[in-house]
Amino acid sequence: MLDAHRIVALHDQSTLHGHDASTPAPIAASAFDQIVLDQHRANFDLWHREDEARDPSASDASIAHVKHEIDRLNQLRNNLAEQIDTALLQLAPIHPAAPLHSESPGLIIDRLSILALKIFHTEQQLHRSTPEHQRRNHQRLLVLTEQRSDLAACLATLWSDVVAGQRRFKLYQQLKMYNDPTLNPILYAHSSSK
Image (cartoon, rainbow, N blue to C red; front, side, top):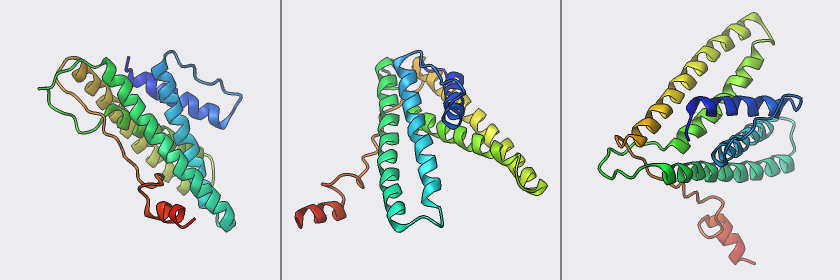
């Protein structure tokens, strides 16, 4: 079920399609693939809202709107990472004595998604500005590519170890508080003042 190389390819194809609709969209071959693509789309949208939030000419109202979108997308991103882990835990053999891995596959896949976006946007920098800017970004691209390769290999090894009963992982819920009107003091103070 978990194929790290396929996940990387889905991320790359989704990123290309997101930036150029004439590029074919990736095709989910399973419900798991669809969750991976949905989670990457949340990261894709989050990346671009973060760029908008840094626009020095944006109005305060625009920044406030973008900030609310960032909060919503970050919550979605985390929820989908948890859905990835839930799907994988349903397939993983139960070996309670196996050593516990500190990072879940869903969190690793989230990191791979972000690396796909960093790689794409760094590649764009190779064709603009000064030769020094291009050299700097070429070096960044080498580092990012190596990091993604290493991380994908770690994910593949983790899943192989889980299936073999040599390692296990848990669903680590993020339990975000900032969007919850019963846990964020600003939100519950605002709602009780009405």
